[in-house]
Every structure is written in C-alpha cells, then in structure tokens.
Length: 297
Image (cartoon, rainbow, N blue to C red; front, side, top):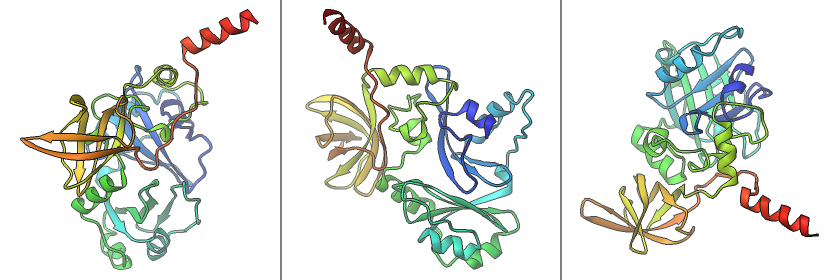
C-alpha cells in the first residue's frame, strides 16, 4: 500500500482490508494514464483495470519497484470477471464472502474460496463484480442465484447510471477534474506523479468537464452543439442516456443538440451522478486581489 500510495492520486496507505478505493495514474502533466480500483485484502492489494490497460500498467509499476519490498503480479490470465445483478449482501452471502454492511458511499471487497467479490462505487448499486479463479467457475456459478450480466446489459447500466469508461470517455488525455473524477484524488496527500498539474487545475477554471446527458428520445453518440456552436461530444450512449465531454460554458440543465451521421437528438446536460468537486482554492488572480485589499487596510 505504501508503494501504491507514492504513485497514484488517492490515499490508500491506511486503506483497511475489505475496503476499496478509486485511483488514477497520471502523466507528469497530470493527464489520466489509467483508472483503477484498489482493493485492500489481508495479504495484498488486488488492483483492477479496464481490459487492455494491464500490460502498460504492469510495466509502469514494475519499473518503479527499485528497493521496495513489493512484488507485482499480472493475474489477468488467472481470473474471469463476472458482473452480477443482485443485492450485494445476497451475492456475497451466496459466494461465502464476508459482508460488512458498508456506508452508502463505500465500496467493499471480500475473498471467497474461488476468488474475490467487490461492490461498485455509487451510483453503480445493484451490481457486484466477481473475479473467479481458473478452475472455480463451476462451483462459483452454482452458488450464484443472482443474474450474471452480459456485456450489453452492463454497458446499458453503466451509461444509464453515469459511470465513465476510460477507453470510451477519457482516453483523450484529460485532467482528473475534467473527467469529474475528484473522488479518485486526495487533495491533501504528499507528492505523486502529476500532482502539481492537478493542484494548478484546482486553482483555475476548467474549460470542459465530463457530463451525463438525458435524451428525450434514443441516445446518440456524436458532436454536441449549444446555441449554434460546437460544445463537445457524446462518447457513450445507451437507451436514453449518454456520457460525454462538454464545454463548461454550457450550463448544467441546459438543452443541447447531438449530431451524428445525418441524425440529431435533443438532450439535457446533467452532472455525472456520484461525482464530487475538489476543495475550493483561490486562483492566482483572486490571491493578488486579496493581498491588495489587505495592503489598503
């Protein structure tokens, strides 16, 4: 945990076994390199990434071990990931995993004899991620009475609830604040890669931010237009919802038009559910004005 704490945006040094934390790997300029979920277990840290990220992340961590007493293992080939609909307490119980009755804003994990189970962060309620070790699929499958989710069903749930995907929504090199991922950043912790850029962004005004869009009809992925001007793009669309990067000149609750391949649709811009904003920090201009005011007094 000490090793992870030096590299990622969130503070996980004192993350208790059974608890989960979101985190980000950043470039030196503060751009998101990877999104992750850190699960603290009694023996180690089990870290989960979206498919396709693990090779780059494994190399990133391995190059930074140096003299630290830590082993990095890529377990991607050793587990299957199942996404399961159902109340977490019931899913954990069926697997024989311990349930701790967490607070509403907490995500928790537990080990069972066939792998790991973890709840997803709000607003992704009613769905549990289960990592099943090779050879344990038959036993774990027989225990689960809840419905296993297909990729299409999970995508509809993810977009409808407003959970961004790194590959689809954030792979363009965005700051954590632009991705509405302040929940994955600890703004008072010590140095980590990209921290200075994150701190500077907290003092400035963002020009764009990831938003949730509610469509009046079927959702559409494409270019966003507001008052006749380009205003961003919807990158994930399913049902009547979308997720996309929107210019901050577009107010929350404003109506926009989304255009793609000769089709258009109306949508209302909302904040991403479950997101928070970082601490309020005065800009350099505001600090100068305060100092001038204090000097005059």
